[in-house]
Amino acid sequence: MDVRNFLKRLKLATGIGIKGETLVYEWIQAHPGEFKHLSADRIASIAQLGKTRAAFCRDFISDDLNQRIERHADLGWLSIVDPEYPEMLKESFQPPIGLFYRGNIALLTATHLLAVIGTRTPTAYAYDCLEALLPEVVADQVVVVSGLARGIDSMSHRLTLNLGGHSIGVIGTGLDVTYPRENARLQDYMANHELVLSEYPRDAYGQKFHFVERNRIIAGLVETLLVVEAKKKSGTLITASLALQNNRNVLAVPGKITDLFSQGCNELIRAGAQPTLAAADIMAEFRGNLN
Image (cartoon, rainbow, N blue to C red):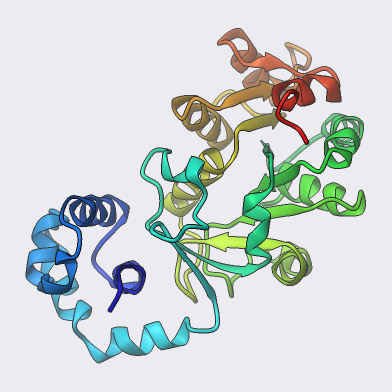
């Protein structure tokens, strides 16, 4: 078994989470080649597993896990040791040890990736802003990344595709699950023509913590992140905070100070995010490196 398949086995095993996976990967990096001799119990120790230790040790060597791996054979698998794994993501906070994918993995090698995120209940103002901002971005072949969620996410994906651009969706469920269901056709289209990424196995339904974990991937993939409408306390601001921790460019569309859905953006701008009034403000973050 090579490292990438070992990491796939680790990703599909039960009883271990992102923190444990990261610890095991760091150990492998420090002890090249020695992963082949690791017992399940030793892996559990490296991962610092507690209550889930016994469950992990049973599962890691089980036929059930072998069958689970077989069920994922038709999905793309991009491990952190693969040369195609994005360098920016690798350098971010707790990068995933691997991602399952459907679609065109070459989109990850695009010169520039822009995340567009925001509220799940956008106003007409948000749509007007995206219609004004995205055409020039798409024309310069910047790939738009978002989370295939309701609201700003799906809005930005659809507008990008309608403009003839390319888009990447990062989801908090398994690739065979759509959340929300209303985005089923969009997700299926992107899985066949664009790119959809997930670090979760088949049949994994979105739990609240999945979307927080998903957000760190979005923040890690891109060099620039744009927030379009967000409440003062929201998952959108968590993603923006992660992007700042990763030294990414964070932009925000300002709005009325009395508007609930502009409070998050206005707070980001007060904290140092670049106010975005036109497409040129976005392109300024890329200018100089664009081909």
